[in-house]
Amino acid sequence: MFFAILAVNAILAVVNKENGKYTADIEDIKIEKKVGASIEASELIEGMVIDKERVHTSMPKNVHDARILLLNEALEIKKTEVKSEISIKSPDQLQLFLDQEEQMLQDMVNKSD
Figure 1 (spheres, one colour):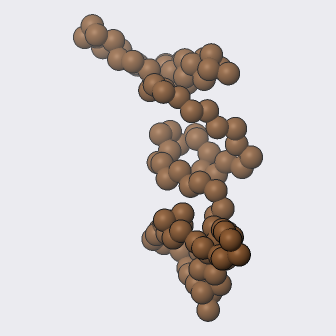
Figure 2: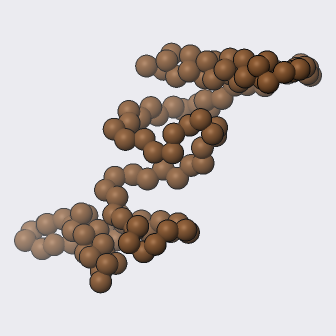
Figure 3: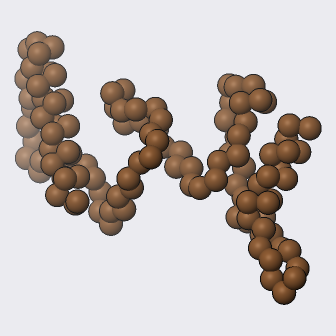
């Protein structure tokens, strides 16, 4: 019964009325399967689901009321064309390096605003 209610609500979310007749394009509904939770954890999400892995453990797992930026280019730090090595001798140095990379990405995002 649980899935029947979800299915009906999904159809009602995409139904159109044309000339007094109701139609629904099932291509407007996507079923995303995830392993690990109970059936009751299933939900109907109205909108868009972007299924991407977190790039870094400090990134949030969920984002609510997000502002979305569409880019027509990669948002990443380009590797240098010169072969080089970075010698990191302590965890503090590693953290400084990671913080600097994060700041560079943040600067790129802020430029796009």
